[in-house]
Image (cartoon, rainbow, N blue to C red; front, side, top):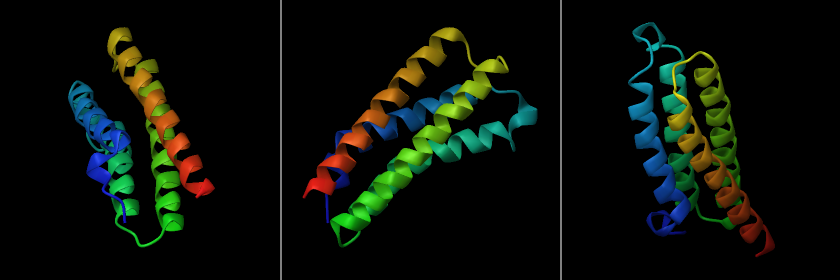
Length: 118
């Protein structure tokens, strides 16, 4: 079992999720059950899967959940691009958020590799 609250990738995932909630507040109201909901679910899935994996019994299970978190951050990135192309996110916020997404993708990948070597 791992203490997920000490993992920088989990902490940054929490911060990213709160930022995604703020960004998506500006989406059109007709997107409430569409892209707004989907982008929020993808964002919250990242730290949630890190936490769930950390609570499992084996490193193999932890790696599996890190992989799911990595898939969710890639899904989030795609949704951010869609929102940007639709004009829901301005250039500055898009660049800030996608930069953080890229950092978290790298962190997750590195953590997966670390545990695969153990």
